[in-house]
Amino acid sequence: QVQLEESGGGLVQAGGSLRLSCAASGLTFSSYSMGWFRQAPGKEREFVAAIRSIGGSTNYADSVKGRFTISRDRAKNTGYLQMNSLKPEDSALYYCAVRRVSSQEYNYWGQGTQVTINS
Image 1 (cartoon, one colour):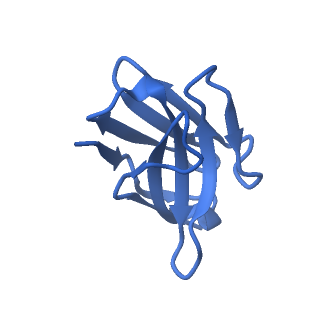
Image 2 (cartoon, rainbow, N blue to C red):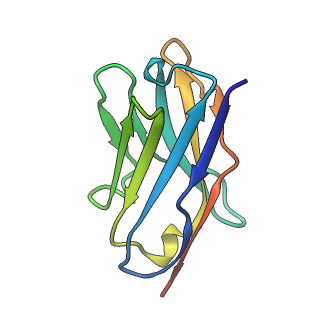
Image 3 (cartoon, rainbow, N blue to C red):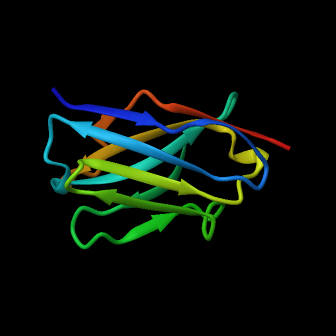
């Protein structure tokens, strides 16, 4: 059974930092690309960042470029999202998801971790 478990969310002041983790089980992490998404109340879920399984190339939403960094530790089967210079508009429920190399869509999703930024 595939499981993704996010952690690391919390309440911080604007300008602060958080590091989210996504622990994967039941799959070979290196065979999947990983993404982070977020959803704020009343808004649609939006893409934040992704890292490809092959080559490790990354891409980011324009709103987080230069502030967020996605990474992963294959040995630990864990992905990360380092978030710096946080803004109130970054407040949302953050989800990690994984996608098989051959898939166009994300196959598995975590339950999310809440990030709240105070101004």
